[in-house]
Length: 270
Image (tube, rainbow, N blue to C red; front, side):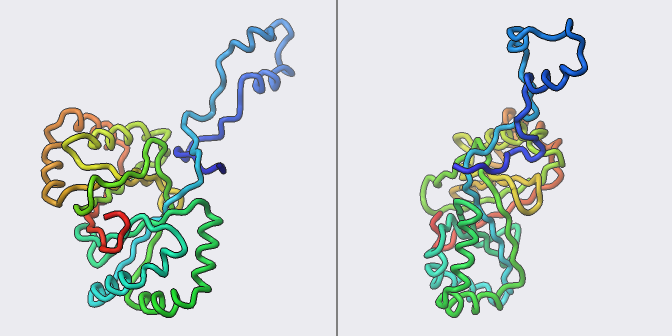
């Protein structure tokens, strides 16, 4: 499939190698210092990148809408009735109402195979009279703001289904320090995967930002209930394995935001 951006933003393409470097330096070295072909082949390869390259073009658009407080119920009702007009154009992963960590907000994730597909979807929506007249013209006055972010799944994560319908979701967003995953990627992975174990929450997916604030990563979790999530938090504080992984990661962290969310009735991810 097509090429996409590296998980580690600060990395350079892995192009250079020892033979290229040797050819460049031939002009400046005396002949007695030149390596024989066999010796040159045995030399270690020069690596300008220490990161895995993303191998797919699929991305996920995160959208957050803030709703006028007096219009929250009306917006959710309208969206429940008309969301089919939007999902006719592209795939909706999930749609949630934020309960804690943001008042009068909804959060939704849309999947696209490429940027050209998203552009085509947006163009089609702009020409869809039902979408415009029955939904968007009514929904926009109910909102106070809209925000979006383009993300990719990190290379070691896959989008997972929750164990069952129901429950609650937590979106944990981490603003990491500048330098990119080449600096903090391993520590972040260890901290997240330490929680993705029996007796803890279910990791639905781990994402990194491509458009929006850079050096931002997200972990989407599923829990049976808000109370179970609270129990898991207390358990983690006494789990030496989790504590050690978090301590190694937190030195790279600038800030963190958590949102607890309930799936809407029409959300594909319940």
